[in-house]
Image (cartoon, rainbow, N blue to C red; front, top):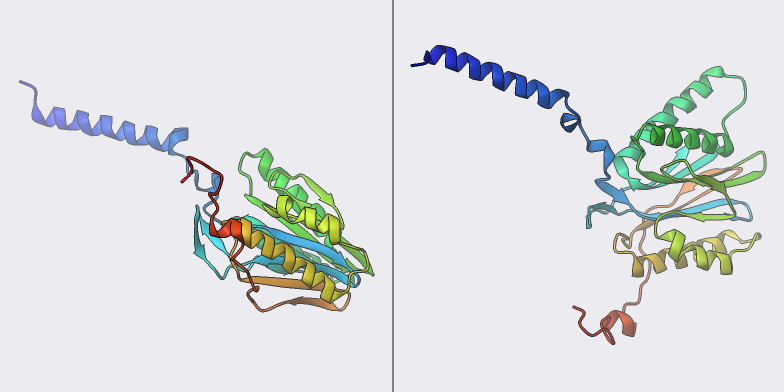
Length: 255
């Protein structure tokens, strides 16, 4: 008969090897940053006569459930720039930490110069592309706008580093539902009131059609004089359209 003590020690050794294997194997690696958990939906940015306007709602979705309704996704960066983000909220917070360090180091030079929106956009492009190359992307699409030395700037960068500049940009569902409206109605000499009205039209369209959108939004403006982010407010909506009241008409076999 086997010695019970020897058998016990053997089992301990085997279990210890199994634990070490599980810790050292790829399956034991943390995968929490590889998938989005709490996410925000579309951000829309436009140029107007005096500067840049940007709009985003305040929803934070946990999967398909709207878990949070007071998530601020429009932030000031330095003196001249405004940043809006779609996607994973914790990754956006990580990006804000990077930008805080960037602005701090820029201020420490104390040479009278400050980073403008174009420099911030280029920096974020490199950050997003670098993380993508490490197969550990920051799960965000970003809109960057600002005004420096009288020059308006508006650009976007995706989670894999694809970037561009334009007179109006959008992320998420806004690329499909808001950009067509902007192509039709945007003009270079928009007044502030006209710009806000246009953004509200886009946000209302998204509210009707994007399940992750909530009716609580903020609009930010940045000009040569400075930046202002509005208090959260709700849009007036109309839900008595026939398609809303009976969405399955003509769709036999649907729920």
